[in-house]
Image 1 (spheres, rainbow, N blue to C red):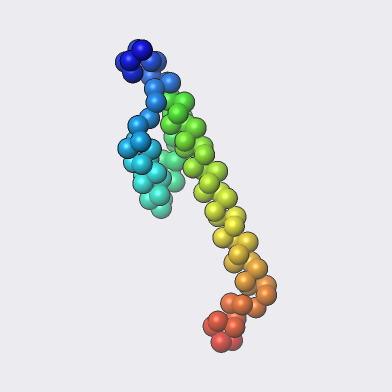
Image 2 (spheres, rainbow, N blue to C red; image 1 turned 90 degrees about the vertical axis):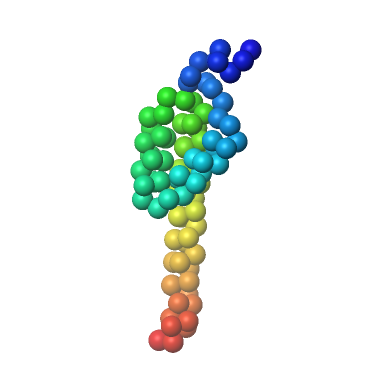
Length: 84
């Protein structure tokens, strides 16, 4: 079985493909738009699942960053750094 006999929606993505998509998704605004479009509308199941997993990763990182900022803000760590 060669790669040409596999239907387009199930073709595997190469390692360089994943690497390229990861770089694309890490671009601040354009990458996030591409991430949403690919997570919702990609024809290839592997691309869609990768975009969804990267989107979940992005959400988790944002929540953790917000929690760290909120803890630092409410404990007074930020005001002690700024000298106020």
